[in-house]
Length: 527
Image (tube, rainbow, N blue to C red; front, side, top):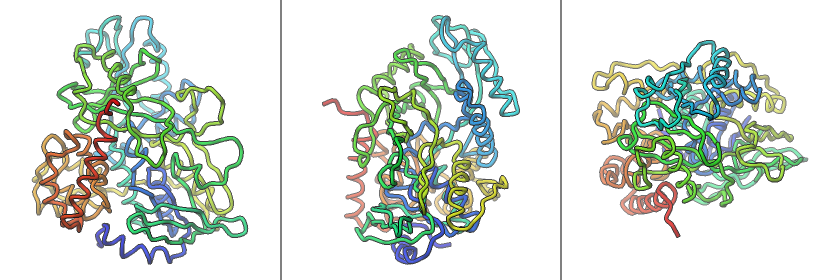
């Protein structure tokens, strides 16, 4: 199999631009990846173009949770909850090791909302839609064992229920792998400059290779925009609906500083918004905020000092004895949600609906909004909109999103490691295991990431820049102090040749990455 890397990209790009495509997807987040996967499985000639890197935007900076949609019940959106629950269960069954169960605890406090009875009623409906009971109320005495350090003043007990958690960037990579395994193609570093139109119909697009500056024209029967907060930039706008960019930011702590075995959901004392403290990738996350994002979309989103204070206050509220301070934070991340707004003046960010929208014009479909959990259903909805334009039909036979992975014997790896690697790499597992045989099964200290995974990503996962490798193909830039600066010499020894970079290029990439990390993934510098 040809390596999927920068050398392949340079060689393949001119030929890909010459093809006639049934479908070109613009946007390499989970929505775009899901659309490419569903089109490829149906034999459509399909290509995905991403302006930065796969999962560069919201899809690597989400809250990492695969929700069944509990909050939709309170709004009477039972159909949406049912769909979300069923998709969550599909992902848990099809991609163990990538999408895994996560227990949640909601503490109930005297005079607080929701109380145990109200919350229990919501969960009864939730469980009925899922087809199985998975919640239980614990008294204060029982909760002390499940949640040591939880604020006890006024605490009546807590309800435990289950959803799921994922590595969102790896989920995108896995879905792209499934699409490519069935004939789809995907390129990063391709910025779409304009849509090409003839007689009022979109017939293709003009894209710039960000790496070389060269421009390429692409022909397609249908162009789908799945560009998140960038959705308004190319489409022909009709009506009053528009994208309202809302920022959600997170803090990541070393697990030893605030060890939690469950996700804790609670209402922030300042504004009664739900926030979470939860375990992820061997660390502890505090999130999230919900604010209007006014910075230019061309700039990488970053947390503000006010958001840091807000999240630290949430942690102090729920875990007062832990005394978490800004100095305890390992890293931060901020994602921008593409919320479809009807433009009502004065509406708070948290009051905006989180529903998706499709805008259709001849030869072009634009998707905005939607949830990570239901990416497969969104993809099918998009394909139904595209099908008449290219003379196709779309049926959903419920086929698996992810091909079954056959795990060969891996005696050097623990069962947990085998499950993790199979979940994250899917069809590419045999290639990865060949590198494990060659390089060994050592993990990067302080993480579950194998050194062999870095080598694999450099050779096979279309890494164009160092931040692609350390912030999305792996999460070392989030999980290790100073963005994994101490490990860079060893990363260089392992990956530089595999990436095809000379010494000057490596130095340039390292300087660029460390500056980016300091600016956008560290604590903000007070001015």
